[in-house]
Structures are given as C-alpha cells and as structure tokens.
Image (tube, rainbow, N blue to C red; front, side, top):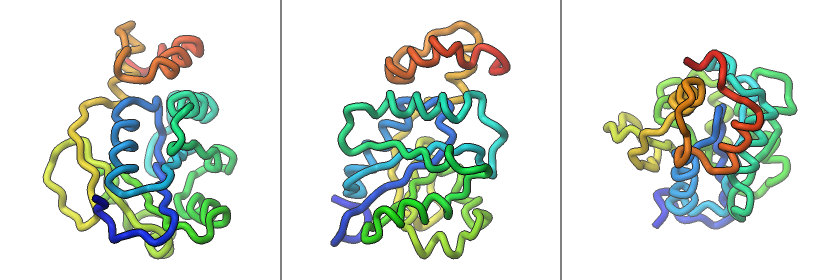
Length: 196
C-alpha cells in the first residue's frame, strides 16, 4: 500500500547523497521506498560536492563505482552520474530538471534523510523544486517526526562515518556494505587515512 496518493503515471524516486560509501542502510531504505511509495524505479544520484557538507573522503568517481557495484543486477535500482559530471556544488534543482527532461511525464519523488528535513527551505531554488517533486523522508533513527512528508521508517544503525572509522582502524566492514563495495574499498585503499 502506497503512502502517496494513487499513481496514474510512472513514478521515479531520486535518492541523492554523498554515499561515502554506499551501505546496507541506504539499500534497505531504497528497497522499502520502492515498495511503500510504489516506485517504478529508484535512481541513486551521488553528489559531486554537496552544498551542505564538507568534502567527501572518496572521490566522486570512486563513490560512483561503489554505487554501480551495489545496485548491479537490481532491475528497479539505477545510478545517475549527472551531479558528478556537473561542476560543483550539486544542486537538487539541476538534477531534477535533468531527469525531468528525460522523463517528462513521470512523477518524481525526492528522497531525503530525516536529518535534512529542517534544511529543506534553505535548498537552492526550493520553491521551484517543491513544485517539481514530492518529498519523502527516509528515517533511520526511529525518532518522532515533526513534518508532514511521507516517511519510510526503519531503524538502522549503520553510517558511512562509522564504516570509514572501521576501515581506518583496520576493523572489518563485512555485512555493513555489499561484498562488491567492500572489494572496491579494499582495492582502492579507501578510507585508510583521515577517517580516525
């Protein structure tokens, strides 16, 4: 049962973020969003440089590689490199306009983490953006919501920060990320420095 009004056209979810690295928390919520929002497709969009975050640890190209490895063979999950190709900062409105040009008749749902809800009004060209997409919130904390957006809720205590710290200290990350992502991290010697 969808938590959005009934759909009458293709519905695409857009899941933006740093994905540094992509992990099972992201993927579990993506699967839940596909089902609960009745999405036909969910597109992961890694930011080149987010306007609200400090720089990422892994390069945009490495994060893109990890995302592609994580969703390989998943027919309803895709990765879009539009923000990596554009000069920073990565503005959501530009991404939405690019996806809208390819999918002019689709209903677009922008998935945001619960920690970004309060900052939504500060997003670049927010008034225009909210006319182009519906927002849905991905909640991993289990905290009470203080907004009216549809919520995909699952308590998951996995974070990119913790994964980077574990790698930097030589601890295993098995079961936290897909095996293909773990292999890219190992081969690329990612997160060994500066994540402690």
